[in-house]
Amino acid sequence: MDVNIYNMEITLQKLVDEILPGYRNFVFHDPKVEAVAKERLKLCVECEHLNHFVRSKKWGKKCSVCGCPVLVKIRSMDSKCPKDKW
Image 1 (tube, rainbow, N blue to C red):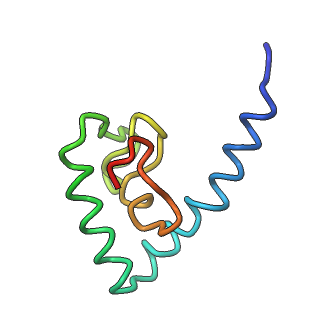
Image 2 (cartoon, rainbow, N blue to C red):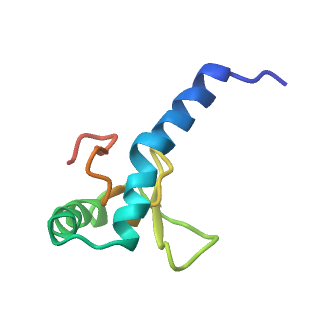
């Protein structure tokens, strides 16, 4: 089995830079972040790449392009939509 270490490093870097801040903002609500998240969610709900996240109903849905839980990614202020919708 071939393992692409470069892709693993990018995934880990993405987790640290984008997704962990999104989890923090999901737990500790900031009105400014929530306002941005609300606008982003409106776009995500209409997107053809929004899929059900089967393992947990709490997290709801994920993006089929990047694989991120949407409720977390929309709260990461350093993240962007992989399809440039926000």
